Length: 116
Image (cartoon, rainbow, N blue to C red; front, top):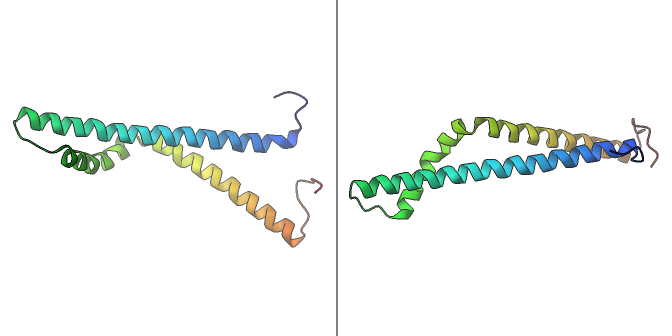
């Protein structure tokens, strides 16, 4: 950050950074879960082929979804925790902004000392 940037821009940049981090972590978590479904589907389909049983791909994918749901909760626990933390931070910022807006609408003094 340069010295020419006003200090009041910091919270907006931090929020934008948190939002970007949330989007990245959520995308990673979603891709990881979808990847797990694909791997489990391939495993079910492959094992069925090895034992000479014909299973439709849709049925294998449905079973994979059922298996991958609880499995992803344990396998991707850290990634899910990061997503939850980011959501909590964004939600807290949203609540703070909402409270500040309500205070301004009531005519209360702004505690930050900014002039409207």
